Length: 355
Ligand code: ATP
Image (cartoon, rainbow, N blue to C red; front, side):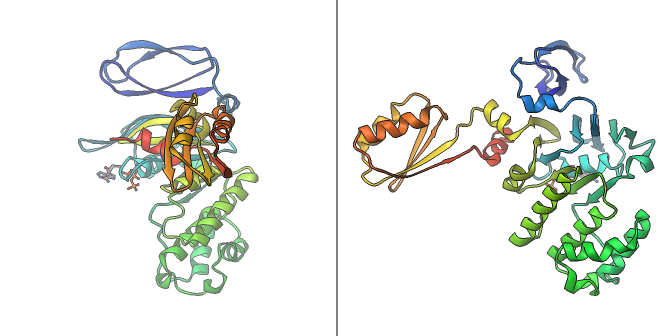
């Protein structure tokens, strides 16, 4: 099963459609009711297909939320599969937190359906949220209580053994601060405690809204490692973040939201293929010259060349790489260093969220 977001040719509403490779899916635009169809390409990446319809831990269908006359999110349809790390990206104000709040039943959607572990978040909220850990965008605790007292409080709320609290505080680097009042904590310390609270009770699903905001590089690394660690144990993770390198490192799939609409959803490598973003080849040449640059320009599949001192940055297909090196040497160039860099999520993000 694969997902694509299409634009209605008549009213430009975005429509998310799911199907199998080669499948022709009939469509009706939810806004203007125009009828049409979409045929999925036969060569969809294997990764997409491994994620079948069963085993969905979060299902979002045609979710919309309006605040008065302003539509914050519109017709979102996507799912998070059991055991995957799903990255949810978008510029400021795109609708990430609104989506997360609707998934968790913290706001009532204007339209659409959300299911967690098969339970409807509106009508079966208790069952739906039973196995979910959540880190909100703005983490809040009781300032007058210590870190440990706060954790005890949430352990009671979640009906979890208090014995988990201290080890979690230690795990998130707050051992020396367990008995300090949270009111005296820095933003980064509160964020760490928020993560400890989210994983309290070993939830099967973790929903993290900007988990590394306010953290120092060590903290960012710790959270990333923690996400990988819990995911290895089978926990499904939904994570929204602005730090794209972090998402690229940990996520199996990403969804990109812009102005309340999902504009892309796929693995990072499939998205870069779709956009035809080519990998970057950096070659250091001791005797770089115009003759060498001209020779490289003529190689088929070389898109763009930047010169940076003795380094040539070449955007080209993987197949063209070997040829590039050969023509450089034929033109008399002496190659002393060579590196390739895959397309970054940042490039993909910028393309999909161009204004
Ligand atoms: P950021 O990355 O800046 O946190 P976001 O992608 O999480 O942004 P949301 O907080 O979901 O974005 O907001 C989406 C849009 O909805 C924004 O334009 C915001 O101003 C608007 N919005 C959010 N909450 C409300 C509200 N309670 N009342 C009115 N408008 C709101």
